[in-house]
Image (cartoon, one colour):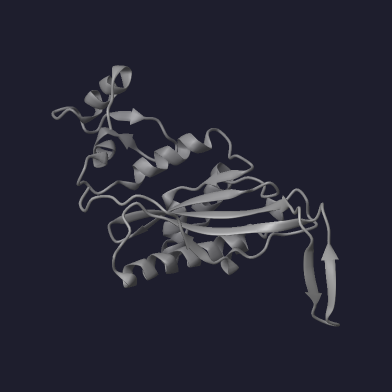
Length: 222
């Protein structure tokens, strides 16, 4: 990656040795944006969750987007560590990073296991169907047809990882974490408080099959 102009000046100011590590460089209500935290972006360093949460805050802005939710690392951490689950913090996350789910299309959830970060993307939205859909009614085995204008659900649970493990056990652990967090999200957003339209709900996210996105692969230790 190459920097020039103002971007280069910023990089030099942040990463030059001998500067005050406690200096707050990024203002964020959810985390501490000091130089010490940003230095974890250097190659070979373990990334602080604060850096991810700063990006989450930037993507969210002052109010959550009705179509995309960017969730902080605290969310998945509490779900995967139930003894640390805090009702006030979860309520803060709902108010700060979530909105109504009527038009929701994507939920971005940073995940952590060991010293490794990866991303889960939940995709759940309706799209207009432009083909005839056939459905067998279980009670009387009648084949029903729906034409143009009907809506069907797009269902995705995407595993995004730029440093994929070659060990099947490690990959399985990451997928297992995804399913657990997805189940929690699915139950959470079926609450009527997330819906302006009270007549319908999306399918359970826990029923989505994880899929692996095609990404590049980081060099070991990078």
